[in-house]
Image (tube, rainbow, N blue to C red; front, side, top):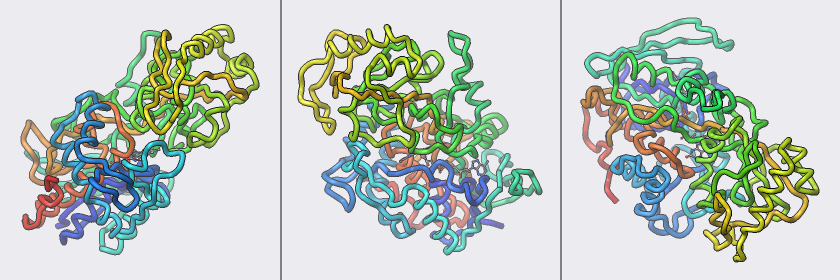
Length: 484
Ligand SMILES: Cc1cc2nc3c(=O)[nH]c(=O)nc-3n(C[C@H](O)[C@H](O)[C@H](O)COP(=O)(O)OP(=O)(O)OC[C@H]3O[C@@H](n4cnc5c(N)ncnc54)[C@H](O)[C@@H]3O)c2cc1C
């Protein structure tokens, strides 16, 4: 019988497969996407958030465990499991040599990627290169990899994994064959349910204006994370769940982005350099609350709560060159009135909003690399940092809509990545990545932590699955769990 079945084909699944194989287990990995779309959301990533006490290869200065933890505590508003968070944080200080061994290469923070040179290690070639490197390594180590193989349900007996039911599909996505595969243990790492528009629509429901906000959502990554196994585990097997189905990593992205896979280049990163107004031409949130990597992932939700789920990021020419330019150019105008007209906002209200904001801007020393003293006074909402008047033509506007990155509803787990049923851990069913990220991320996000969680728990899950299958607990993931 197969030792370890790994379900999913992104970072967490690949980390699990590699670890289990390194431990000597036979491993089969099932990816529901065709080969050309393999790698899930992981192929869209750029970096990994890492703790370090001294400068390390591509990372400058230090980013100690306590600071990483405090950052996470702040963005989640305390809705996090401290023990599991610290497991992921500590693992991030030791995982890179292992990643390099499997072909991943790192590079220093890109210019334009704000405030990340200290905290985030960037993948050379991005997540696509990372995923390709892991696939190459997995193939050469003898992991059996199958594409177009969607697992639609698990056979679980008394909390223990027995088998998975697979639908094999052809290039057109039609089911050509079903298969029941047994294994001694199983790792589920097949993403959240962010690609499942119907489920998102059901979770978000209607707002007070009678709108279905999800009708204006865009999905930043893969179309293959349909949450099939989350639903199967929740409804059919009554696994212990964690997280709120409406909580997700959500970014304000270019309203012209495609429904799926727009990726990083559709992100609008100039929010903290200007102001953001809704369809009623009114500001609705502090654009300079904190560094952008700690705030960008709340803006999708903020826009989702606005009428029509649409907003406009407004900057003047002083902001140009200070943020990663999105793939599509913004709407450009020589006057603010013309800008309002071009984007279809009420000119009078827009001018009032900009004038009120401009008048509230206090003198200060603008520095986008620190939480500077440029703030507003006497306007609501306040802009706490980087507040400068919008007064230098040409002016630019980017229409934004909510871009869902990944959902937080998932399976409850522990530091051995075990799935729980009625508060009891399974001995052979494990979970990693987005499927359990909600244990650490109850809400909010800080850039790079998705890959931190996926890498840490993918490795633990693979290790534990191999131990469960082979009955060998020597050198178990204690090393991965080592306190720092
Ligand atoms: C545009 C974008 C940019 C991002 N940038 C970053 C970043 O720079 N740093 C960071 O930390 N995080 C980033 N993230 C978040 C990051 O992608 C996720 O946290 C991480 O990749 C999750 O890894 P995963 O393996 O759990 O899921 P995924 O990488 O999404 O993999 C899930 C896999 O499961 C497969 N699958 C789904 N259902 C089934 C099924 N039923 N049967 C078989 N296979 C199935 C999918 O095809 C997919 O291959 C980004 C996300 C997006 C969308």
